[in-house]
Length: 474
Image (cartoon, rainbow, N blue to C red):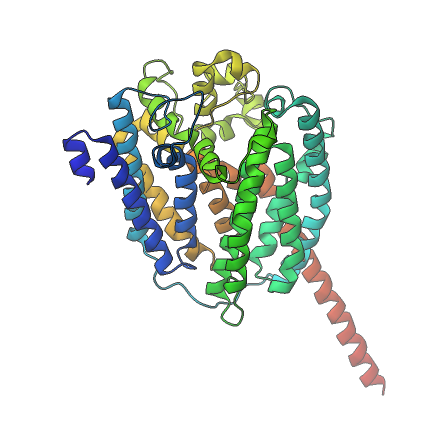
């Protein structure tokens, strides 16, 4: 169908071929749902951020007063639309190919930690560090909620500046890392309930501030964790009928709430939302990132060609730190600034400023997409290789989950970041995992756990010596 669509230049046939390969990926994941949950989740986010709009508009006839394009795209040029569809098909196909190259056979169904570090000490320390940093995170989010309520969502990106101390904010950023480390110790379902509920609560606060994607990603990573625990825990079913029913019931409610937030963010009347259009409206509005693929092609002569956007996040990580700036005198460009748009390596900033400088200065942004970055930097070949790499990485996550505390933490952290790749940078998952605050948090947890372990060993040794002394005297 894809070849026929190309030969006869039929966009509808190309779109059907895209839907077909997506359905293939989904059914492939459903064959072994718990093992392939990460692959399944990525295809869902791919659909939401890149396919939702171009499928919803022709299928439901969703009315957009600002866009009369048949596919809901910003382009009417047939060649540009065809290029977008080709890029989407290739991405879905080679994501699957990359995933199947690694395979998911031989995953252990049960395992135990080994090594000198006591897993129970890590679980204890990471859990209470999460509780401690959770308080800081709540305060930071409440400040953002208040700011967003008073000034509008867009101002969060253009004029928001925290009044909290720098150290306070950094401590708050430790909360998700401590939480993932705690989950990586494989606590029982009962012991993990309260931390999971608190983590979801952080997502709810983010939603109140206007960050819908944070809320969704928090929920998705918990569902993924539950499915992965089905593999590692033979005695307890983590994701069963009860959880499936809960998800089915919650899904329409969550979609409606996300739509409410989208209206509030732009100060529109919430009463306009109807149950009938809830789903089509949600997927149509979420699918704007697909336009970035077209812009990466049509604006290739406008954007600076001496920048590498695919690995821009890594370049920024290496440049935007105290050591690089002091020793090598490297300039630092803050996000959502003209300097970042013109001189930085952020595709999101550059494309948003190029499309509408005025709105960009006032907090608006188009975001990014890993496909758009790959195409701009390396063309179609880059899209093929990049998706193969992502597919292989997705397949590796399940195995990584069974490789001890650090392996499970890496799996959860990387997975959460990769799920956002259709609307984010290709290399964002590396930066989101190996940034300085994450590494400091991991260091604190393991040092603290070792100290607890040594203290416990010393107490046990003293008790043993006291008992031996008592028996000797007797």
